[in-house]
Length: 478
Length: 119
Image (cartoon, rainbow over the protein chains, first blue to last red):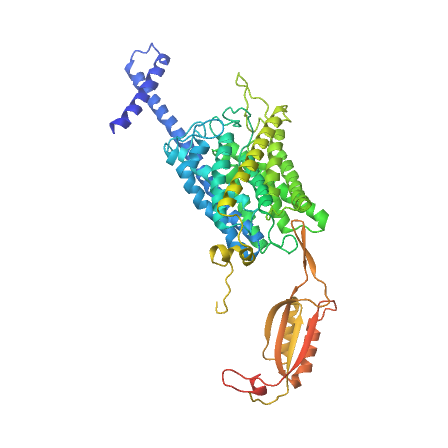
């Protein structure tokens, strides 16, 4: 009790003493005004504390909501989206790949991954200061988010660490052993995600634009960290593991576009938490990111479905929802830096570009990126990261200041052509780390556990061969 | 096994899915009391169609159809055939087919009635 009183009392005293010189020196009944003003000052101090408290509560409410929204993107969002795209004998196996990450990455994050990503370390990786979440409590970390508990920041970032490896699963769908998948994902999270998150968002990170990195890369919500790393790793997986048995001769159409539709719509909604939540506060920047996110998703759906309509004569549902996801991917790095009209442009380009990657380029090279993790996340993420350097606006988010504290231009259109170069550096490092890291991990897992299920298990399907269950159980009496 | 040869015919009709209600009503109107309906896939001369998923074309040549099965006394068969023809025809390829087969015996499981009484 006494301990709590003392800081409060000293605060009042400080305000009192600061206010003293301003007091009129002439008044005869000196005692009365002095005590009145000390009352006022105490009230002011209390009000300031309450105002800060209220802002913190407001920000915290939005950030906890956002964290829940981002978790919803993995389960059920991504699980349904991917689950619908595979053949029905693999629906559970595919959903389990998403769900298992919700469990396992959470454990790793608590033990050491949060520290590796966001602890104070060197330019490439965080230190061990937050091992076992030491020092991660109610107090904010001003370097990351001054108004929310570090614990909120930690759990919000965890949701990103969960969904990112989940995206890769689209590349090796329908043919990877569950055990190998888990080993791969755990290693991938440690070797690629944690360092990449640290480089872009962590203290003293090489690419951190907010905390003075060497190559300040603008990446609001994870264009490089989430989408390029996962998308490019997906391509490496598809190339390394080879095609599914029977691909591309046997038809392998999605077993339920209905499931994929529900999943994609959940992804769209969840993405508001992903992007607007990346403002790490509930103010106008969150609004701006929310709007940009929504506009890009809509324009990309128009772009993809429109391109398809022109080419095939029909706009497909799968095309429209794939387009919206492509737009959400592309706007991710840009969300907190661009105005609504550039967001529309980024979305439209992403929709058409990713359609072309998936429908044309994939067929040209013949790799079996089964659910188009590279075509959407790798390609869309790279496009978005570069376009962020073009369209970033200092009005939306004043990122760069000169020595006098004046706002400097952010993107190329504002006159900062150099930013495009920095974006290239960020993109190149993400690509490089993803390619090399994924190759090494695949080699290790291949040599120890073996990556692929046996051919007869692949024909039987992952549901039965890996989990001993069926997604659609059929029994005459049921 | 010993059974009497009765004058009964099995009518199998493969029709467009969208015509099931019309055919069912037409059959009920002429007094057909029972039928079995199956969801089936198949193709005759009607060509399949293609579906496109993310730019990849899949040809679907087994098309969803509805199949009705009923066993009728021979006196009813021609009326039933006319009812199906009238209700299921659109005049386009893909309207389906009717097959007639002789049936020797029918047995009601509940009370072992046999022959036309079991229909």
